[in-house]
Amino acid sequence: MLAVSEIWVPGGVVIFLGSAGMAVAGLRALGLIESLPVSIGAWLALSVASVVGLRGLVKRFFPAESYFQSTDEDVEAYGTVVETIAEVSESSDEGRIRFGGTTWAARSVRGVLPAGTPCRIVHRDNLVWVVEPISEPLLAGSSTDEEK
Image (cartoon, rainbow, N blue to C red; front, top):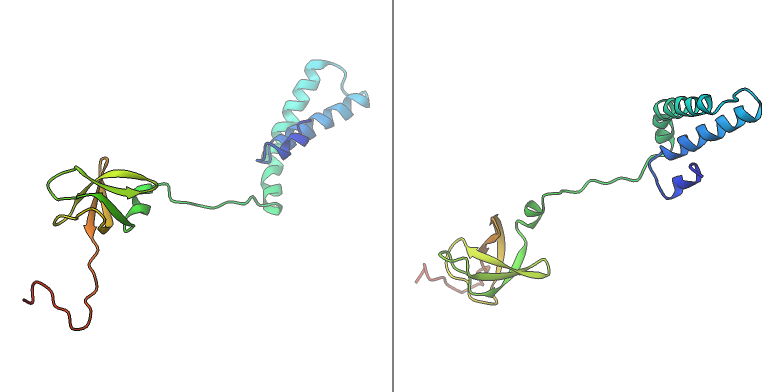
């Protein structure tokens, strides 16, 4: 049962425990082991030996599927474009943005961002996301306030 349970409990350990149990059962059937304490000791010794000695070899031929993912959600959020839900300003944490399927308190790096303005997440200060306005590209022939 231990060897078969490897299907549901992956990791390459349980199959060795089951194999050691089957080996001890074979030794008992041959009459080489008769007492329960010796059977338990043999099972423990065979289990440890097979896990330590064979697990690395088996993992080399049957590699596990693995992937690495960043666990710092803040770093992944930096640079994400979000939309303001309520007016966001530099001086207040009263503003709101929609991010990750919910709304969050937000503060602006510069200026006031009215509701509905797209902005970019810069960093997080405790539970408040700090955002900056997305600068719109200049169209040919248009002018900025600084040029006027």
